[in-house]
Image 1 (cartoon, helix red, strand yellow):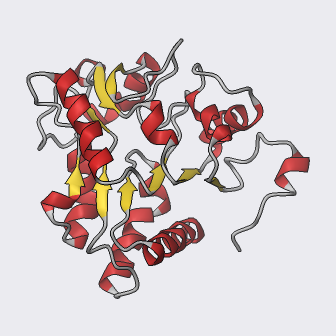
Image 2 (cartoon, helix red, strand yellow; image 1 turned 120 degrees about the vertical axis):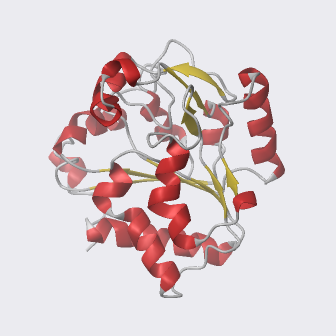
Length: 247
């Protein structure tokens, strides 16, 4: 896992060399924690090996119905695992404000701010077991702009342990639209572990479909997928043999 964290940090360093004030799309979930991605970023910042002082951070989604300081909000997650450890100015951090009275207007505001920043330069992604990216859940159609999404029941069940019960897991979230994600200048998706092997194979081998949002990365002009041996288990051997090894 340290190899993956280091490799992702190397990719980020290259991005920041090209543009110190890059707009970075963040991700939450278990992958940054199991791989130590954010720990490595903080370590490099403290060792003066990585300069995030001018970077701006966009979190593309947030649960509806949770206050900002709720321990399971994505803002709390990012504060705990990254922002509080690298001293980021508040004005450099953007989340959807799910406490706004008019959430549709908030979605528009969020998109406008990202556009005023010049769009996403470098987007880090995880991969949900149902194929979602960000909180773009499988559906018959996916909006192009940020929107209110119903959290898939299978995902609510997965989150129940963290919230204490299924009843406490929010049923909706605000998430980025497909256009903003696909307009990111570079996408770095990380998936690790046997539990992700099936969905990794599905998004790589299946046709592009809104029923499997991760497949849209097949269409992106500059997307990188970083896997470990377990998450690559479902891919054909002929494909695995052509993959670049980090080591």
